[in-house]
Image (cartoon, rainbow over the protein chains, first blue to last red):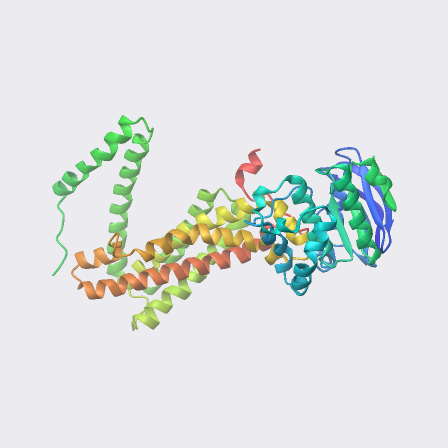
Length: 208
Length: 265
């Protein structure tokens, strides 16, 4: 369970938002919406322990997120930033990167087995793995990154604007993938500007 | 067989050769003529001063004075490394200085004691040049590596956060940046090592041959100089990075403002 209690975030004495409450249970798909600059991504980064709260607290699986507990709690989280070109020559190497980390290594062989199927569910040909990373489009890269995060076997998946580079058909496929992942008990929390995506979520946190 | 001295008139005749680079730097309007003249002037003054105080260091040959000389070199090298990289002294001075000091002591004494088997490892004839050459090489490699490392984390922070956000430890998330820093810093040394003796005759070896040593002795010293400078550079860098990581990231894992120009902006 992810619980945000009376959270306030700000930089250089300027408050971005205050007193935000939110609860996301196991197996639920949630989203954070709001205008640009309202602090959606900052809240996502606060859940990851990268941004300090001015007040309030964040609890993940009953444990308070603090600078000391963040590294341990993050072992049960996956994160997909909005735009990131991983330093890899080939798409397959991109997929390998998070699975080379000590905490994910044991899932590497499962990823190799299941990734083509997940990519297919997102409308990608499995030969995309043999392509050069710089040759694929932004939308393809976004879907590959999402597919990778779904196979990390984490309890909470945090994604920043997962459909920003996708058309309506691909958005639907991403939503279906999130739903399938949630059915296994995983929580997915996405920052989004897309009202249709937001309406399909179980929980919506609107920040203004 | 001693080294043939160069009298001051001959030295002046030799300096006439500087006219060649100065002419072309002027002809192609590089704007480097003044810097070259200042650089050459500083070189002349600094080397005459070094010649003077090395004369006294060798004359006194006192372990305490020799070691004090190493401490001065560490302080000057640390200050130079930070001013060249524009990294903040408040955050990085201690890690850089400790990296230089610990690695030069470990590697320098290992070579003097275990390889040369000197009865007096503080003997100025060996102690001063060996520590000097270690320090010079450490400075060069640390400047490149620290700059590459911190600039990489600053420019590609999304990758750093991505790795942390997917379960990496701090060290795992920084590993790609450390790897880049090592590649950029040590590639020229490794390439240079591979062609040593073929493309160019290295300085230490030439110095020893000019000083009257046999080529057989000179090549052994040259090999050892390369080994100790590469080892000391790597050790100092690892000490410096592991100590500096503790000081240059905040409790939330974010890189602090480590470059001096960030303050100006």
